[in-house]
Image (tube, rainbow over the protein chains, first blue to last red):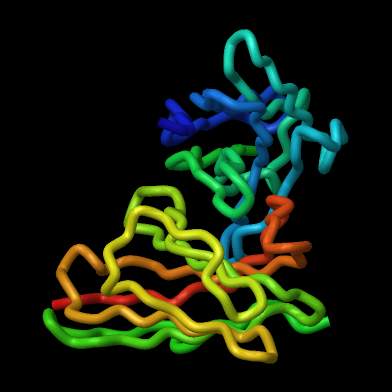
Length: 108
Length: 116
Protein backbone atom coordinates (compact mmCIF):
# COMPACT_ATOMS: atom_id res chain seq x y z
CA UNK A 1 0.00 0.00 0.00
CA UNK A 2 1.11 3.52 -0.71
CA UNK A 3 1.96 5.26 2.50
CA UNK A 4 3.76 8.37 3.70
CA UNK A 5 5.25 8.44 7.18
CA UNK A 6 6.31 11.54 9.04
CA UNK A 7 7.64 10.22 12.33
CA UNK A 8 7.80 13.51 14.21
CA UNK A 9 4.64 15.34 15.23
CA UNK A 10 6.65 18.26 16.54
CA UNK A 11 10.13 19.52 15.82
CA UNK A 12 11.37 22.38 17.94
CA UNK A 13 14.61 24.21 17.09
CA UNK A 14 16.26 27.54 17.77
CA UNK A 15 16.67 30.20 15.15
CA UNK A 16 19.79 29.60 13.11
CA UNK A 17 19.86 25.86 13.79
CA UNK A 18 19.68 23.31 10.98
CA UNK A 19 16.34 21.67 10.32
CA UNK A 20 15.50 18.25 8.91
CA UNK A 21 11.90 17.16 8.62
CA UNK A 22 11.73 13.45 7.96
CA UNK A 23 9.52 11.78 5.38
CA UNK A 24 9.53 8.13 4.38
CA UNK A 25 7.30 6.60 1.77
CA UNK A 26 6.27 3.21 0.50
CA UNK A 27 5.36 2.97 -3.18
CA UNK A 28 6.04 0.28 -5.71
CA UNK A 29 6.17 2.57 -8.73
CA UNK A 30 8.24 5.61 -9.59
CA UNK A 31 7.33 8.13 -6.89
CA UNK A 32 6.51 11.78 -7.26
CA UNK A 33 6.91 13.53 -3.93
CA UNK A 34 5.98 16.93 -2.62
CA UNK A 35 6.22 19.04 0.49
CA UNK A 36 3.23 21.17 1.40
CA UNK A 37 3.27 23.83 4.12
CA UNK A 38 0.61 25.53 6.16
CA UNK A 39 1.57 28.72 7.96
CA UNK A 40 -0.56 30.00 10.83
CA UNK A 41 -3.96 31.22 9.59
CA UNK A 42 -3.06 30.44 5.99
CA UNK A 43 -4.13 27.72 3.64
CA UNK A 44 -2.16 24.66 2.71
CA UNK A 45 0.24 25.43 -0.14
CA UNK A 46 2.88 23.70 -2.17
CA UNK A 47 6.43 24.29 -0.94
CA UNK A 48 8.42 22.18 -3.34
CA UNK A 49 8.37 19.06 -5.47
CA UNK A 50 11.19 16.63 -6.03
CA UNK A 51 11.15 16.77 -9.82
CA UNK A 52 11.92 20.49 -9.72
CA UNK A 53 15.08 19.97 -7.68
CA UNK A 54 14.78 23.56 -6.53
CA UNK A 55 15.36 25.41 -3.30
CA UNK A 56 12.36 27.33 -1.98
CA UNK A 57 12.76 29.68 0.99
CA UNK A 58 16.08 27.97 1.65
CA UNK A 59 14.49 24.51 1.87
CA UNK A 60 15.65 21.57 -0.20
CA UNK A 61 14.55 17.96 -0.37
CA UNK A 62 16.30 15.09 -2.07
CA UNK A 63 14.58 11.92 -3.10
CA UNK A 64 16.50 8.88 -1.88
CA UNK A 65 14.99 5.85 -3.53
CA UNK A 66 17.28 3.46 -1.70
CA UNK A 67 16.08 4.67 1.68
CA UNK A 68 12.61 5.58 0.35
CA UNK A 69 12.97 8.99 1.94
CA UNK A 70 12.29 12.58 0.98
CA UNK A 71 13.53 14.59 3.94
CA UNK A 72 13.11 18.37 3.97
CA UNK A 73 16.17 20.33 5.01
CA UNK A 74 17.21 23.87 5.73
CA UNK A 75 20.65 24.83 7.02
CA UNK A 76 19.57 27.80 9.14
CA UNK A 77 16.01 27.94 10.45
CA UNK A 78 14.16 31.25 10.68
CA UNK A 79 11.24 32.11 12.95
CA UNK A 80 9.02 32.57 9.92
CA UNK A 81 9.59 28.90 9.05
CA UNK A 82 7.34 27.91 11.94
CA UNK A 83 4.46 26.05 10.33
CA UNK A 84 2.89 22.67 9.70
CA UNK A 85 4.69 20.66 7.03
CA UNK A 86 3.14 17.77 5.11
CA UNK A 87 4.96 15.34 2.89
CA UNK A 88 2.81 13.99 0.03
CA UNK A 89 3.13 11.23 -2.55
CA UNK A 90 1.32 11.40 -5.86
CA UNK A 91 -0.37 8.13 -6.52
CA UNK A 92 -1.70 7.50 -10.00
CA UNK A 93 -3.07 10.40 -11.99
CA UNK A 94 -5.20 12.09 -9.42
CA UNK A 95 -4.45 11.32 -5.84
CA UNK A 96 -2.07 12.79 -3.31
CA UNK A 97 -1.34 10.69 -0.25
CA UNK A 98 -0.36 12.91 2.66
CA UNK A 99 1.58 12.14 5.79
CA UNK A 100 0.26 13.17 9.19
CA UNK A 101 2.40 16.28 9.24
CA UNK A 102 5.18 17.73 11.37
CA UNK A 103 4.81 20.98 13.24
CA UNK A 104 8.04 22.98 13.07
CA UNK A 105 8.51 25.49 15.84
CA UNK A 106 11.45 27.86 15.53
CA UNK A 107 12.20 29.78 18.70
CA UNK A 108 14.20 33.02 18.87
CA UNK B 1 -6.48 36.03 -9.74
CA UNK B 2 -9.16 34.64 -7.46
CA UNK B 3 -8.13 31.80 -5.17
CA UNK B 4 -10.13 28.77 -4.12
CA UNK B 5 -13.11 29.68 -1.98
CA UNK B 6 -15.20 27.32 0.11
CA UNK B 7 -18.50 27.67 1.90
CA UNK B 8 -19.64 27.41 4.55
CA UNK B 9 -16.58 27.81 6.75
CA UNK B 10 -18.16 26.09 9.73
CA UNK B 11 -21.29 24.04 10.21
CA UNK B 12 -22.85 21.71 12.73
CA UNK B 13 -25.08 18.79 11.81
CA UNK B 14 -26.57 15.84 13.63
CA UNK B 15 -26.16 12.18 12.84
CA UNK B 16 -28.21 11.02 9.89
CA UNK B 17 -28.49 14.45 8.29
CA UNK B 18 -27.14 15.42 4.90
CA UNK B 19 -24.67 18.19 4.10
CA UNK B 20 -23.55 20.03 0.97
CA UNK B 21 -20.24 21.83 0.84
CA UNK B 22 -19.33 24.19 -1.97
CA UNK B 23 -16.13 25.15 -3.68
CA UNK B 24 -15.20 27.71 -6.31
CA UNK B 25 -12.01 26.80 -8.09
CA UNK B 26 -9.19 29.19 -8.82
CA UNK B 27 -9.50 31.11 -12.05
CA UNK B 28 -8.20 29.07 -15.00
CA UNK B 29 -8.35 25.75 -13.18
CA UNK B 30 -10.44 22.88 -14.56
CA UNK B 31 -9.89 20.18 -11.94
CA UNK B 32 -11.23 20.00 -8.40
CA UNK B 33 -10.23 17.55 -5.70
CA UNK B 34 -11.79 17.07 -2.29
CA UNK B 35 -9.92 15.98 0.80
CA UNK B 36 -11.03 15.13 4.33
CA UNK B 37 -8.73 16.12 7.17
CA UNK B 38 -9.54 14.66 10.56
CA UNK B 39 -7.99 16.21 13.65
CA UNK B 40 -4.28 15.46 13.86
CA UNK B 41 -4.20 13.77 10.47
CA UNK B 42 -3.09 14.71 7.02
CA UNK B 43 -5.62 15.33 4.26
CA UNK B 44 -7.21 12.17 2.80
CA UNK B 45 -8.29 12.06 -0.83
CA UNK B 46 -12.02 11.73 -1.35
CA UNK B 47 -12.37 12.23 -5.11
CA UNK B 48 -11.42 14.39 -8.05
CA UNK B 49 -13.54 15.96 -10.77
CA UNK B 50 -12.37 16.86 -14.24
CA UNK B 51 -14.69 18.29 -16.90
CA UNK B 52 -17.72 17.56 -14.76
CA UNK B 53 -16.88 13.87 -14.40
CA UNK B 54 -15.49 12.04 -11.36
CA UNK B 55 -12.11 10.71 -12.52
CA UNK B 56 -10.63 9.36 -9.33
CA UNK B 57 -11.94 8.25 -5.95
CA UNK B 58 -10.39 7.40 -2.61
CA UNK B 59 -11.54 4.92 -0.01
CA UNK B 60 -14.80 6.63 0.89
CA UNK B 61 -18.30 5.11 0.84
CA UNK B 62 -20.90 6.04 -1.80
CA UNK B 63 -22.69 8.36 0.62
CA UNK B 64 -19.88 10.77 -0.25
CA UNK B 65 -20.75 12.17 -3.65
CA UNK B 66 -19.97 15.24 -5.65
CA UNK B 67 -20.62 17.38 -8.65
CA UNK B 68 -18.63 19.67 -10.85
CA UNK B 69 -20.37 22.40 -12.78
CA UNK B 70 -19.53 23.90 -16.21
CA UNK B 71 -17.77 26.81 -14.49
CA UNK B 72 -15.60 24.21 -12.69
CA UNK B 73 -17.04 24.95 -9.28
CA UNK B 74 -17.89 21.87 -7.26
CA UNK B 75 -20.04 20.46 -4.48
CA UNK B 76 -19.37 17.71 -1.99
CA UNK B 77 -22.44 15.97 -0.62
CA UNK B 78 -22.44 13.65 2.34
CA UNK B 79 -25.57 11.69 3.21
CA UNK B 80 -26.46 9.88 6.42
CA UNK B 81 -23.84 11.72 8.43
CA UNK B 82 -21.88 9.79 11.02
CA UNK B 83 -19.93 11.10 13.99
CA UNK B 84 -16.65 10.14 12.27
CA UNK B 85 -17.47 12.48 9.40
CA UNK B 86 -16.53 15.37 11.69
CA UNK B 87 -13.51 16.88 9.99
CA UNK B 88 -12.14 19.73 7.92
CA UNK B 89 -13.11 19.30 4.28
CA UNK B 90 -10.63 20.80 1.87
CA UNK B 91 -11.22 21.63 -1.74
CA UNK B 92 -8.25 21.97 -4.04
CA UNK B 93 -8.16 23.09 -7.63
CA UNK B 94 -5.56 22.60 -10.30
CA UNK B 95 -5.13 22.75 -14.03
CA UNK B 96 -5.02 19.28 -15.46
CA UNK B 97 -4.72 17.78 -18.90
CA UNK B 98 -6.93 14.76 -19.47
CA UNK B 99 -7.57 14.58 -15.77
CA UNK B 100 -3.92 14.12 -14.89
CA UNK B 101 -3.09 15.89 -11.68
CA UNK B 102 0.38 17.44 -11.68
CA UNK B 103 0.45 17.34 -7.90
CA UNK B 104 0.40 21.10 -7.52
CA UNK B 105 -2.87 21.75 -5.77
CA UNK B 106 -4.28 25.10 -4.70
CA UNK B 107 -6.27 24.64 -1.54
CA UNK B 108 -9.17 26.50 -0.06
CA UNK B 109 -9.39 27.27 3.64
CA UNK B 110 -11.78 24.42 4.23
CA UNK B 111 -15.20 23.78 5.67
CA UNK B 112 -15.18 22.50 9.22
CA UNK B 113 -18.00 20.04 9.77
CA UNK B 114 -19.04 18.92 13.23
CA UNK B 115 -21.47 16.02 13.51
CA UNK B 116 -23.24 15.66 16.85
